[in-house]
Structures are given as C-alpha cells and as structure tokens.
Image (cartoon, rainbow, N blue to C red):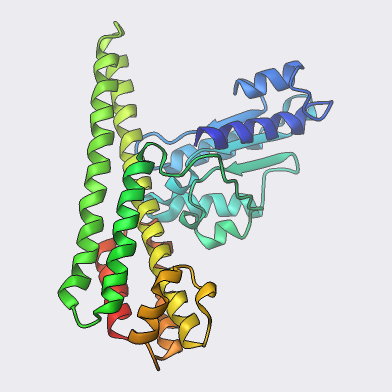
Length: 310
C-alpha cells in the first residue's frame, strides 16, 4: 500500500506544480511529504472508514483551495468504506457524482479493485499497477509450496472424479494455510508492540499506537486471506479453461497446464462445455465476494464438487 501512496503523492505534486512535477519546488517537496495545504489524506482508524471521517473530508474539499490550486483527497485502503452498512460508500458515490467544485480530485487507493462496489468504480478512472515482487510479500516461498500442492491435488481430483472425500479435503488444505500466515503476522505484531512499550512515551500515546498497530495487522490478515482465496480460484479457473479447451478440440499446447492434457482427455471426454462455463461464472462471483468476507470454505467446496461431478 505504501507504493500506491507514493504514486498518489507524485501525481498530486504533478497536478499542482507549475513545472508539471519538477520534484524540487516547495509544492512538490511538501506534497511528497504529505504536508501541503491543498492535500488531504484519509487513513482508516480501526477496521473501517466511518461516516464521520467521510463527512469531514467532504467538508474540507468544499473549502476554497489556496492559490486556486487543485484540492486533492487521497483515501487509503478505500475498500474499508464498506463499513457502516455501505453508508460511507454511498456518501462517496454522491460526492463523486457531484463534487464540491471543479478543483476537486479524489484518489481512492485499493489493493483489490473488486472490493470497491461497482457503482463507485463506475464513477472513477481506474489505473492498475503491478509492482515489482508478489502481492504475497514475505510469504512468497510458503505460498509457492501450497500452490504446487494445490495443482497436484487438482490433477488427482481430475483423474479420480468419484473421490468426493478427496474433493472436500481441498478447501481444508487452504484453511490450514491461512492461519499459518495469520500467526506470522501476530508474531510480528507482538515484536512491534514490545518496542512501542519500551519507547518511553506516555501511557495514552502507547495505547493509541498499540491499537493502531493491532488494527493494521488485522487488516493485513484479511487482505492476505482475500488475495489467497482469489489466487486459488484463479488456479481452479485455469483448470476449468483447460477442460473446456480439450472438450472443444484444443491441442496440448493451448492449455495452462499442459501435463494435464491426457488426464482431461480421458476423464472429461464428451463433457458439456456449458457446465464448465457456468462454473467459471461461479468462480467470478466468488472472487468478488471474497473481498466481502464470504465463507470461502463453502465457496471452494461448491466449485470443486462441480469440477468433479459435472
């Protein structure tokens, strides 16, 4: 998320800099430090962005800017506007449709665009950025291991489509992986909190920083869980696309997993393409809902059973 903020700050500097983003003038330097009078940054406190914070931001954006420059509002972790029954999303929707004036720019930062409701997305210009390195950060090696295990497991399932108990084991494999990552984050959190408590700050300040740290790590666990589930759905979708390709007469080199060609040819011969297209549709729906805290185990069971029973 820090890379997204850096991009947003550079964009803001470019907008108000008389030289188009020289990075040397007072406007650029202060904007990049996030200390500029026409720049507002909204960060979540806790696990949601509440209505009052949005109201305050809208009020600030309604005040005339200094030097007739653009007023730029950056909302970090914008998906957290989903709290309060979606009221904050609705307030933002109305503001995007009818901004206070022509000098307003709202930048919504989000790591998972599916977490932003379609009505809000449709009012925005979306830019997708892929940063160097994986979205799974420090958990890359562990996830590669589970990814290989899942691909092998799917191969077994496609070979033995009558083994329902094996199919149901699939979601439990994912379920055992997610708590491990959560445990790592909590362990890191404890170390951070110990440092904070030894900082010499007064008790109220320590309590505030500790609460902020705990909230941030809770959000990190939720985000990683959503990313993992979506990636798992992507792996299953690739297998479904391979099945559809083989049934339609596609050759081995057209598959995502070429090693599965013979297995699919034997197990899915004469199958109905429409059934697998429906399953792909189900995966797309579940990927969207994964950002909203669905029971991913039920969702995975539904898709996997469809894969082996269709």
